[in-house]
Length: 269
Image 1: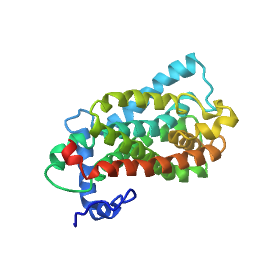
Image 2: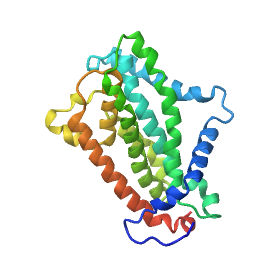
Image 3: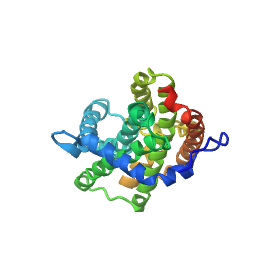
């Protein structure tokens, strides 16, 4: 691989990333193994976390607060949202520390630094795939038959991945510059959850504000997951369009921001 300086603001060295794809899969495999190393129940944690959260939400926000659930049973309503949300939150947290935690490797050998946050968001798909299996018996129990929209689940997964990578690039770059950023991330994730239709439905937002609300990328992802997995309601058209535009914009400028410190990251950490 030929090492060269960046040629401008829009030089993201994606060619180097593609040339290093074998290293990317190695980093993904390493992340997956480290996550379940020396754990008692292993990959079951990917299922237990959203399921336990779903039970809590069903009791407090469903049975007690009686928040509207778009006609869906509360367990289905909450779990369909928690699956993509848990993936996004875990990937965002992992991306924040991706550069700093690998400083020993970075200071010894050159490779495209973009591989580190990218490997985190890809590795998180393993947890999401395992957790998605839980939806099958839940849908069968409540007699819910998914529509043809189920075929669009991979598209919503890809959108969640891009959203996690977009915001992750901003946070991991800021964490290199200011190490106390990692302490702020839990509050950012918590804010994102309440600003996303996890506990409530996006239909609770007035129609004239729907497109603004959809600028939160996870709004389109979560509403898309609910619609695709349950076949209930209408496809999230305007919200999905706004979320897609927001993801593309955040990812583009995230790559620009990340590329500005790419060449000096070894000196900064």
